Length: 140
Length: 148
Image (tube, rainbow over all chains, first blue to last red; front, top):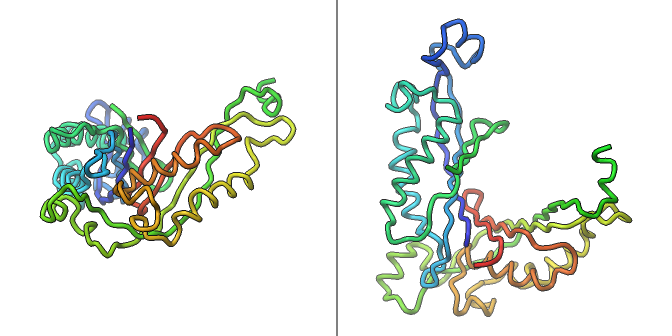
């Protein structure tokens, strides 16, 4: 079993404001991140797939397939967007990096399986860096 | 007191990682595939003249702390092993042509990581090889923990 990790980048803005909290609570809990205009980050996304090495190709998964799926499903909709306004799932779900990380995992788990149905490789982990100082990992 | 016996317990496992770099060229080609298939599957990597990368290798050894030295291993021994088994074999080499195993096995990052594991694991007389992580570029790496 080999674990292959590919790193991608996207930039997006977001605002942390929970429908479950009052306006005062949102300000208290999220602080600067509650600014109604939003703010942005350069996100770094690490996608890890696990699988045996195909003896014919020497590869765990065709990187072209991985790049295409990540580009179509994540980078195109997320990059240079306002997550709350432009990505439907985050209209009612606070786009904390935890939630963005989990959503990326959910999307990629499904779409990678669809894109390479014959491949035994599968999504293992999504790691999302919001800044150099904090990152989140989700393994399902 | 917790922590007081860190250097004496003998059952505390520590993971030590040594990073090193090497530069090599390679190309991807399977003689069982047609030229068209090789090009479709491997793309630019199929160029028979090869192309190169600066690889970054991270070797992680797991071991107990020697109470006499406070160390898992003498890093000098690990450096010597990496020099003998990896750098002298792969650094500034055309992997397909100059590293025998890659004459019949495509030198993908996956297979290079496995080959490095296979070279280091039997020669490691201190600690236990835990992980081989090999970066082909800063945006692509593989991890191998041994086994199938």
